[in-house]
Length: 96
Length: 96
DNA sequence: TGAATATATGAACAAGTATTCATATATTAC
DNA sequence: GTAATATATGAATACTTGTTCATATATTCA
Image (cartoon, rainbow over all chains, first blue to last red; front, top):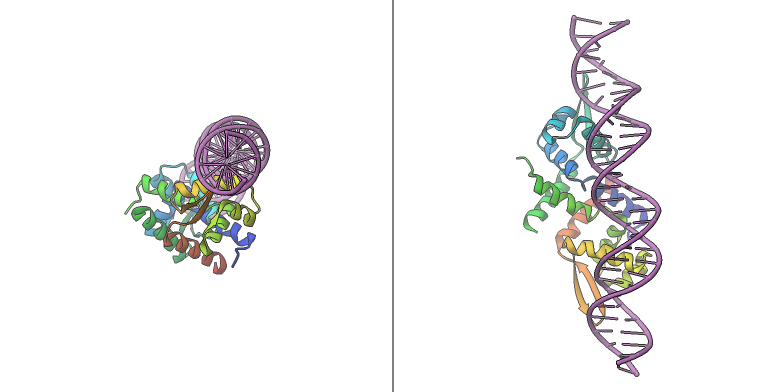
């Protein structure tokens, strides 16, 4: 069963979303609880702008979703699938 | 439980290995059976040089291993873990 | 309304990466 | 030994990507 070029691109895009240490740390933080942009920026030691740019990509990939409350935007993982991918990768890194 | 910066980098590197459509297609091909460089190049429609460069990265990440036979080098997936990550990603893309 | 705050976004630059081309190494056959 | 074949590698180039800075949008509070 050969993988179509389209699926290959989509798969690559999915993994690309997790291919940066900043984004991995954002995902890791969001696994524990939802957070808004400035909290994430504080925790990540990144500017809010940089975090916002990264979150945009994660949003477009539908890896995270948003909940607006006043002028704050809270981010959380979009589904359990993302968490599973993350944990499986972590397992590989730990016992690889 | 906060993710260490080192682990974040290692995780990002792991996912980076799967963050390119060419490499995804190589992994996909190797899931079915081991292949040598020129067979992969033919199947991927890439030059043997380009394939070899990509395989080098996959080797360094220990996602693939090699078996030498005469002047040919056969590549296969290093372990089931890689296949699982690939299939979980594919599932996400299909039903995401 | 205007000031303050939270987030988003566009442009620019730096850093990283995939491919191509030329060349090197290794193995087999003669 | 030489020729032929399979793969690997270094350098160069083009492309992509992450961050910063400046600015824009949106919301709350006075």
